[in-house]
Length: 594
Image (cartoon, helix red, strand yellow):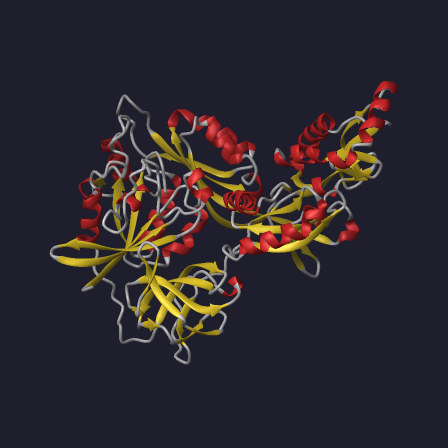
């Protein structure tokens, strides 16, 4: 292989949480795909590398997980090395398929573009899906020009589905991008951008070689953990694992080094030869969980099995944090931390698909910062949130995480988007237009920016955004730090007994609305008992809302007696003296939102 000219990175829309870690991978190129092609372009580019399927079924190579194919998303980076002939030479292209924007210029596209420019990356803009009757490539090109200053003549128009223009993308990569500047004679510097777990070989690290050479038998060390390992295998993905004698500058591949625990593999870490120190690549930050939820088995007897399944699944996703927790209502469970709500939802589906887990997940929460007179504590479980109205709690201030959000939407939906943002406590709201909307077929698109509390977008915000914009709006956000907020813990009482699994943190401006909403919901799902049951929402010692569940009539009591004989089949939970069916908990928690 005479040259190792570039690395290709593409982005998918829904998992923007993975974008940051991928930027450090390549210092030469980002390929921005507008109107998305999912993983179709990546797979279409591999016609010389893989046998194309003749079944007519979509057999994508880079999206391997069932959940990825079902949802049409890319959950994390997948890599593949391919050889492309150009100008009489063989060029090695490293494809990294990561989470892209759809329907023209998206909020995610803007974030990707700005970070790429800041890092000095060369950008090749690509418009896909031009085979569709409704495609408007000229209008999309005008948007790219007005938004990013991109020359329309540099934009490639392709259809990943039909293959039209795909060859031009590969040619543009070779023509526009200089080869990597790494030196094979310099000390080894390898950037770890992902990892996976193999039950026989342990952790398999995916790396990009910046300098030096790595081969079987080498002793390497981590800049972050300082731990040392011996390389037992190196190779490339072509498209499956193909062992090689070495990896050199510009190559992307995998290494096995007897790393036993996934927690030792840190995304963004720099690996170097043991005893030969190098400066780590800049920008590394350990991933941190921003969304938390409790996971409990429907049958309490399945906890050990569930915990083992979670541990096995986290071997392939080390960004999930795990902590045991106990609930008087739901029994033993685990409190898990995720990078975002999509990450949480994908993890849940994988638990169900791959381990046949039957689970209940509590409503997602965010990490709150509690500032006391003598210390600061991060709390992610609402049951641990202090009573701020009690002066003896010594709480000086409560802070919540906020995000800097961007929404791109056609102008006719601007009013709806503003109302949505204000309803979720948005601040610093501003907007500007991306194009003039001069064509008769479509209106102008605008970008709306604001600051939002993270807690306001981890429940049903995205669903409302899509619903109110008829699916046209795109949404993206980045960490905005913490901000002081007037928050309180709300608990729900059944017959005077608190239900810990239903506790939530609310802003005081919405406490009455939220309290009334949830006691009404509880009133609907809780079956009548042999006695009258008050259902209450409380903040501190103050009752915010109340509903009363009337007692059964005499006939119903007789039927209740018969049903109690079948209780083992119905899996009841007892809250004090109140029997609550498991499916009632499931109904409440599966729809729990602001």
